[in-house]
Image (cartoon, rainbow, N blue to C red; front, side):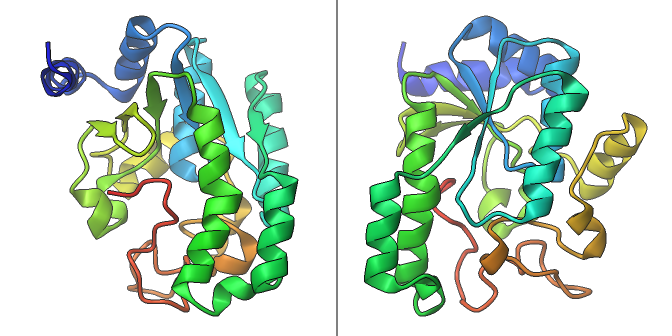
Length: 234
């Protein structure tokens, strides 16, 4: 059976399932080979709760770029405590960070899109590849309404760059549905969200958005781009 047909069959199986049911099915179909990447955003906190509440055999991991907000790191600790789980943390390679800073400066990512993407690659993309290596399914918290780029995504996709199946269980959720779920289940979230930070990444590269702005407008606000770091390239 072709890879395309396999993905089509898998998508048809999860399309009518709730996110929790879909995660349980994926974990059963790919035992020990399903991982979830969390950036500690609201979407990711929902998925962490779904995994923990069902005690699913899904490895949860996060990427510490070395430039995260203190609030994000504090939330990681609170999340581990609440759900009695350990989130595996991946860090960028020291030598790569030192070379990057030597070449472009400590904040050289402000100077060009090329510099910014180089920083994202060293601090996020390369650690992600290590985290995904040897696994078969990568669970993400992507939602279609987050950006134009993400609106074209499917619930089940093939990630060519990482040679892995990507599962986006919250793809069709609205912002309002997500907030309602967080409130109902008393899920911990980053206090920066209450200060206008919708999408939270590295501290130097994230600002609160203004009324009417796109949800991703606060990421790399100084440049005109698709507002992606390379983790979810299409």
